[in-house]
Length: 106
Image (cartoon, rainbow, N blue to C red):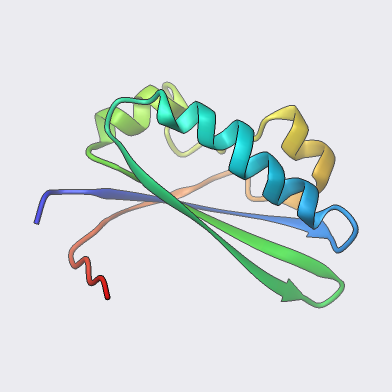
């Protein structure tokens, strides 16, 4: 298996703006990520969390160098664009990175 890094981040939106965030992710975030060398894919998970909707974003990169190309000098700093900030009520300021050790696909 090729080495891969998973970048994991969470944000919360009201039920009224949750679809706005999903649309932002599928359009602006997707367009930005497609331009990053070493980008290997992304998943956006959605879960009702009390009165809010919690999103978990998992983006995959070939290496930490590729993560730096996306996130800048501090790769653990969340990248939250203005459009996302308008749709979300709160978000994690820091992200975590994990080495993918198994990749099972059905």
